[in-house]
Amino acid sequence: MELLAEQKRCLDCLVSSIEQLGGRVDIPKLEQIAELIIQTMRGPWRYFHTSEHIFEVGGSVDPIEVLAALFHDLVYVQVDQGVSFNISSALCPFVKEVRSQLVIRDETELPDDAMYQLVASVFGFIPGKTLSPFGGQNEFLSAVIAAKSLEPFLPASTIAEITACIEATIPFRPVSPTGLSAIELLYQRLVSINRDFNLGWNPAEIVELVKRAVRLANRDVENFASRNSSNFLDNTWNLMPETNHELTNVNSYTVAGYRRSLQKMEGFLNFLKPELVFQQFMQEPDDETYANLIARTRKNIEVAKLYLGVKLITIAILEALSYRLGRDIPLSTMMGELRTPGFKTSVLEDYLPNRQSAYPLESQLQREVLDLLEIGRNQESRYDIKNSPVSTFIIKSIGFAETENFLKKAQEFFADPTSSEEFLSYCAPDVIETITSGVMKLFDSRKTALGKVKLVHQTVS
Image 1 (tube, one colour):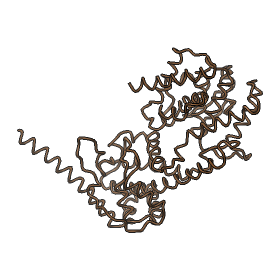
Image 2 (image 1 turned 180 degrees about the vertical axis):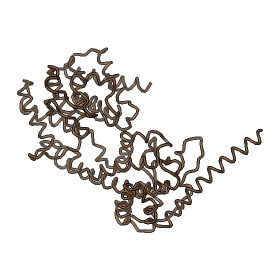
Image 3 (image 1 turned 45 degrees about the vertical axis):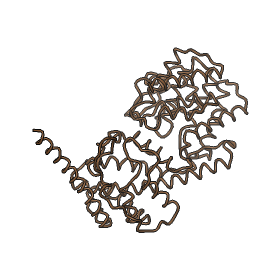
Image 4 (image 1 turned 90 degrees about the vertical axis):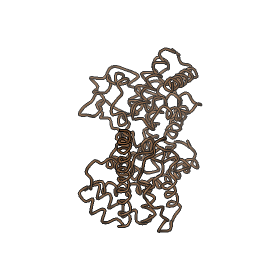
């Protein structure tokens, strides 16, 4: 029922937008496109880049933005572990796989296809180019499908505008060696494309269509500038299972698997510069709005880095302890299963003391992170609880001042698992003893539960 409702919503967006743009509407064919989009966006590993996301990014005002958003995440190779069978046939004439990488076909192999040439020109991609997952691969392939899907309904100039919006959603691009931003380079290419493809735009129209592309691209990453850092972390937790598929196996993913997902996200945020998240072109957005976006992004990244750092320290302790049992131990073995309605199961937090902070908080950042650990993010996720009771116990015991050195030791342990006992010896003994005792009590509770089952069986017999 939900699937049909989403397909209907997508179809309505397609029909309404094409009508507003004066295009040709063919309901049966547009129904097929709507089904293609929604089926793809509902892939098994889509947690953040879902159909709801494309509706939010597109808004409801500008038909070009609406159409660009519907297609902009259609291809997401890292998340879907390849290209969906349903859309691969549209891409095969233009792209091939070479040594597990996607490559644009050589000029002699490419068909004489004006619409493809238009998309490639907007992106500045040439025949033979190896596509990079972090350099526009997904956006380019999504734009190719958008162009070929919409070719029967809209003129080339309109499809070029849609393509420009999709190109602008390539995230986190630094300034080029010539000192130009990605969006300024897009503007330059559009000036050339207007001439080469005879699209009929005047200079003012080119500026406006680039501004539109900036609006869409900034809406695509607006969660980075959330006014509430908890909302930003909610989205972060939705992103992690998209590229760490082990997390989708609730209650069976390993301690190391969960740790690797935290490591990836923490490493990404440490690398990311706030200035690369949002784009600006000729006062779109204006300077004050842009500065506020960057400031909120910087603050959210700082909160997330400290939060993830504490979570990594916690998982390091649990992983080191789990090595006393074996390798690839499920996290649920060490912490208990995620609780579900109607079932009462013991979890590690049941056996940890409610400790007061041993060290005073020194900043608003520390206070906010402690609240996020203790009270929790806004939303539960399918694979994790929203609060972090074990992390709360640890940070109240050791204080935030120790996290930087502690995290370095944890990273050394992650690089050399044989140093697990050495890492544990670095930790505060009372913390390790309390957590170890808690895990043992958790095991005892399982033993007791099994004994009750046996007793009931004997009584019935």
